[in-house]
Length: 352
Image (cartoon, rainbow, N blue to C red; front, side, top):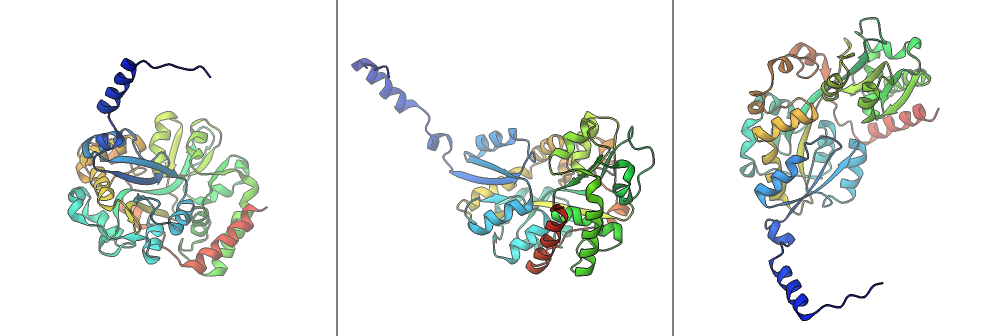
C-alpha cells in the first residue's frame, strides 16, 4: 500500500472539512423511518422529496408477497416502522397484535382519501384504527389480442389446452386458489376443505398448461409477447398496454378479488411519529398523483383524481365500476388453521 505523508497544512485542511461537512444528523435532524413496501410500488423520487421536506432519513426495503413480509414482522415487529400489506394480511396482523393504532393528528391529509374507500377498509380494519388506504384494484386476465381470437369472459380460458404453455399464473396462494374457487362458483374465502380440495384438483389439472408461476414478471412477459394469457393485478394493466397495444384486460364474469393495500404502523415501531408523517406525505394530492402515474394502480385519493385524465377514470380495468365490484370480494384473514390447509394443498399443486 502506498504511504501518504500529510503536512501540517493538509491536516488543518482536513480538520476544516470535517467541521464544515454535512453529517447525517445535520442532513436528517428529525431521525429515521424504516419503510417496507411492495417492489415497484412507489415513485422513488418521492423518497428524496420526503427526506428534504421532513428532514427524516428513509430506509426503504421491498417484499414480493404478503406471505414473505409477514414472518419477518411477526419475528420482530420493530424491524420496520411502516409497511404496506393487503387487506386480509392487515386483518391478520391486527388480530395478532402486530400493528399500532394510528394517531390521526399526525395524518391530516387523510381528508383526501375518499369516504367510500375508508368505509370499504372497515371490512378488515374496523373504525379505520390501523390502516390508511394506499391503492386498490382487482385481479383479472391480461391477454394478447393477436394470440387470443375469442372474447374472454370466463376463467375457463385458463384451462383451454390450445393455450398450453401460453398461460402465466400468479405464484401466490390466495390469488391462485381464488381463480380456481371462482371458476367453481365458490367464495374466495371458503374454509370448507372439500371446496379447497376441489380447487386444488383444478389447479393440478391446469398445471401442465402453465408456462410459469411468477409475481412481478407477469408484466414483462406479457409486454414481450412471451405468453397469450396472464393472471395479473389491474394496476399492471395500464403499464402493459402503454408498452404493448395488443394487450387487453378483463375481470371474468364469475367474479374476482378486489383488494385494498394500505399503510400501517408496526406495534414495535421505533419511529412511530415519523411513520405517520410518511403516511401523511403520501396522502398529499401531489404524492398520490405521482404514484398513480408511476405505478398505475387506482388511487383512493380524491384530490389526486382531479388531475387524472377522464379516459383513465372511465377505464374499468383501472377504476372498476360498481357493477364489476359487486361481483368481486375482498380476501379475508381465514385463521391459522385455514391458512395451513391452503398451504398444504398449494404444496401439492406445486410439487407435481
